[in-house]
Amino acid sequence: MATVATLRDLISALIETSAQSYKLSTVTSDLENFFTVIEQNDELKDIFGSTVYDLDEKSNILGDVCQKLALDSYTVNFIKTVIEMDKFKGFIDSRELILRRLRKDAGIELAQFIFAKMPEQSEIARVQASIEAQIGNKVEAEVTIDPKILGGVIVKVANKLFDNSIRTRLNKVKNMLTAA
Image (tube, rainbow, N blue to C red; front, side, top):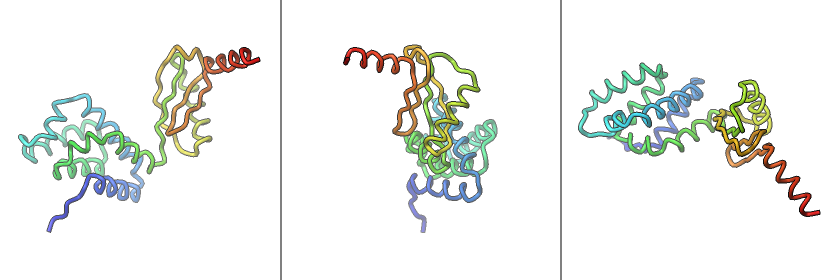
């Protein structure tokens, strides 16, 4: 008798098996790459979520995509299972929740680093190390540029905000001067 697995069950199984094999970080990175490709290609999204294509056709197309992305076998098998169980639409719709859970279990936090101008890689690494020390987890940096902050950096990670921008410092000085 077949059991009905939910997407949550499949993800839990993926996390458990990949963690036991020390591949959780690899699987997390693989799924980030896979989601990016799918989000950029509506045709692939339609194929994998469609009932028009049979399972063999979907499997062949998936094999090509996974080979081009050089995905780990754990990731490939997971995606195949999602497609076979007709959970692909929910899988795509739950992208952010899935990636957040994978990152959390892998001990990785996604952080948004906001700079006034494009920083050197060494500056990103310095800020990244500082944030990792403060939150106790590994940080994956997503850099964005906002000239309005004038200089410094703002970091958004989980439910925390670290604002070391020049604009904020100037506003603090302004508030102190007007309050006096």
